[in-house]
Length: 489
Image: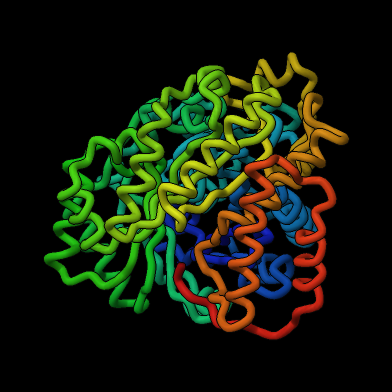
């Protein structure tokens, strides 16, 4: 069987799950009889040489790229394959390649780019390569090099998720991921593509448009139960951009999981105003089916800032949702974006006031924070350029574009350092828990609770100078070496 090698660069995270994007892309190839090898640097020692060795008899190598640090390893692998195996074509795909396909293709080691949804496009590319052809003319959704020329093919329309083969999770060594997560058994899963909303900071529309296409609920339930049994799963993180676009479908899945005696916990992403329209009875049904955590894109506590990014949200739905989720045992997790162009000092105070009120409504609510990273392809990108953001000119330069530490023309120096301290105290005070966490016990539990109270007090006063607790905690973590047991949060 012809071989295809797929590489997934690391997110540089302590957590790891089978790379769902590559498993999706592999599905049509497996159905056609190709021998697909997935190399994930998160669980593969010396992943560069692993890819080169696998690629020696491969039709091609595919590399998934997301804007930021993943690009560093992606480029490193592409260069290594090109140096060792100049005859093997290298194809880039993923969010970054879809948003900036021509610039990605200009990288010397990249031969072709998959733009947008990749399952069918990549299959057609592989079939062309398998015939010994390097000209990809006519393959919708792709770009390729013809000498020094970049050839654009027409875009490919959306492929219905229900028309695609079932995802081949067996291609990865699941136990390697469980070991990476200290025994915790979890996966990423997808039951729909796209989102109908039009928030201006989001680049989703550049890949899926403003479309939302769901997987049939019966198929979603059957596949999740099969995966639970096969891998003894404890948790499934459903990464749909907006799981509750249709409440009746979410409830149909929940009721199906209950009937199927599913035992795993699952997480979803949605909006607080959509939870606000779910009855108490239906929310209880979702919880009974295993829903344990919901991620919400709060972004800011300022109505002015929210309007500036075209996000329409009533903050009262945030408080009600936090409280209602607590009553049924669902943890609400809110994402915040600091440094949006319209954010001023008063907006920052508004955001921290919302954080405080949410914490009072539900003490178990947590928050994740980022620095605004304007992505090309998002409606806000031109505004960011006008404000002085320098657009990286090569694929390699995008590796430094990171939402955790982003420095912006209007957010640098002292202001940037202050925001980072605020983010430190939000993590400390509102437990920005990861998918897989260590459960504190004994004196550590007492210390964590004490730091949590102190951090919340500091945030209420916006007194973040001299963050001695942050420094002490970092020093302690740097010294600590003992392994700890991981649990599902």
